Length: 86
Length: 208
Ligand SMILES: [Zn+2]
Image 1 (cartoon, each protein chain N blue to C red):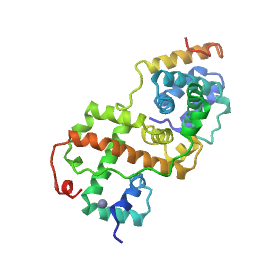
Image 2 (cartoon, each protein chain N blue to C red):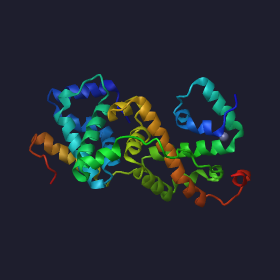
Image 3 (cartoon, chains in turn brown, green):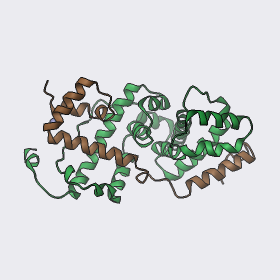
Image 4 (cartoon, each protein chain N blue to C red):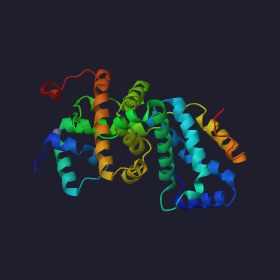
């Protein structure tokens, strides 16, 4: 069966997650072999996900961990005493 | 990154038996996750950090109620989500919140944007700070229901089931929202990528 681009787009997320069934996977892969548009969409979406999972993209505030553990230490010391930060 | 369940279960048992200092170790692998979860809901750094602290303290205080049949990370994420929602209600008012956050609309165009220059972009382009910044902004601006699913699944890398469990929605709904979130982001970032990619007009550029 020949897939249309639109059909590929509908399944792109599940395809990336590897959760489409074997038959559909095969159809999508056959389509990708000759369709530059869908290949580029797939690549760009995948790259966005790689960038998202990269720790440098979403950084924590400087000192976050230290402040968290200080707060926790106060709680461990005096349970329930420290319900408000500073 | 993730501790094995046995190590974790062992740690939890020891903490509950009185070695409370070990809670620092238990929580360390999940600090980032807790913050990002909070941020995905409140979208403000200070609020997210305060909320993350509250969530961690709350997890410590309620550790005895944690059941070993769920994953600790999922349990902790649920606490973080509840803390975030509480804060959001406080700042925005419950009514507005429930309208904005409840459901996906069935309208909207969830079609990815075509681009032909992507392959021309050298891998180093992904290293550029501007691209990271654009992605951060795009994620932050996603509608809440999409932002939260995307954050848990693609940023914190929970699986579909864990994401569903933490947010209290079905796996099917997670998949729909995730798909839409990814497409929206792809669409958001394509124009940005086009302007930074080498200005080449290929065959498909004309065809479109
Ligand atoms: Zn196609």
